[in-house]
Length: 276
Image (cartoon, rainbow, N blue to C red; front, side, top):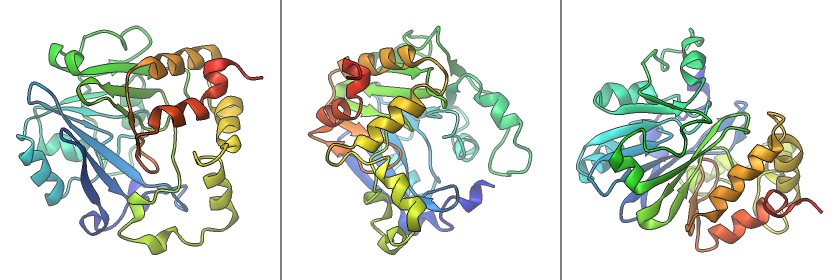
């Protein structure tokens, strides 16, 4: 059940901040395997047209609603960042029924198969990314004007990666973590303490600090080959790296500002340049 993974009172622990004038993050605690604190994050983007896109929604609190209203209130796109980041879509769709539901191919079937979680409804999706349409303008002209999109179809979770062109921001779900999740636990730092060996290992495999050899090995040997298409994974990484961005917002771990492109290149070095 998803309620075991998320905070009971998200208003008390969420951190809402403007990363740029038109990009807001909502950072919250989140547990992996009900044990490992990796944090969660929604990203709210105000498009040039005035419409609002929400990537990987988290709990919709009164404070989040106020930020949405500050942006004009026109929530037009609710985006599940991959096959895993969809828990709160029903809550947001109920509040903003005119918003289009967007996700990767396979997500509707996954949601319909979940029968014991009241948070997950059976809403119809308006657009599903697959290997044929990720680079098209099929969602809308206003969306295509502000975003480049890459579907990392070779990732086991079918990652949707957004590049918000007006403010040079890259937004992603599980393609790359940046642990520890300091901001996401900044209102409850005690929850980051302890955790034992499992947490220590998981953090070592998902940090960007130093040479980050564990992170690089995880991506190369496990993640990029999870769908038996490392060449396709590498192609996606190269396309993402080729965009002109300087801020990286992951769903798990801290946002990277200033050195984002360099950090990405370090973590994905083998995918960009070949493993030596």
